[in-house]
Length: 326
Image (tube, rainbow, N blue to C red; front, side, top):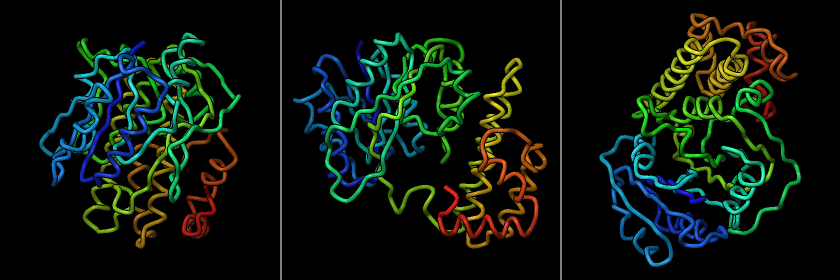
């Protein structure tokens, strides 16, 4: 049961890359049990020498591509991966010690094809150490999981069987390229096609929030590109949903919550009134605004009921501005 780590980098500090790779060496696996594939997206300074520092400690391969963003870097790595299972880690993030050992044990014990687990945001001087273990474990088919829960749009909290990607087939599952929002369609389609998934609130992934990250930049050009990327991802998911035989309740759920995410992001902008109106109009053309009636959660129902009115939008803006809606 060999594991392939896929690590992508772009203009990261040397210390961030070392921290990530160091964490992968503390996963309770022998050298022959895993490989590390690092793909750099044409950083200003080539990090190959930093990666090569780890060559004596782990089976690591380095690739560098012309700048095409993270989706293309991950796709390149997937074509090179030789492991039975895949774990994707952003180069500025890291894993708690023994996370991968826990994942592989869960995959083996429950005869599963993928595992979904939890993450924590990084704190100042957060140690790379063993996470607290959780006893909460459930097993679902991908379709059944998506009926009950909204798929989180990140592949980094998953460890999954490489065969699910059909990399050698006529229609391999790949990430969207040259876009900011590369995870949403990939993760949704991956979970949808997975026969057996272990789901746990075990915390194993540490997410580092960068002030210059995609979702935190504030310049107008970037904001326009980001919202366009959201709608492009939404349209790809709509097309995928339409191509699948009914019932596809789980896919509908994902479309509805992605619509909520877009509107919530609009509410956080300085020009939130116009931005919300523009996004709502765009969703309306896709029959996604007003939000479809569904009994997902109290928060979804609340958002659905008040978001069509100007007074409700003002309240939602206040809640988002003060981080009271999460």
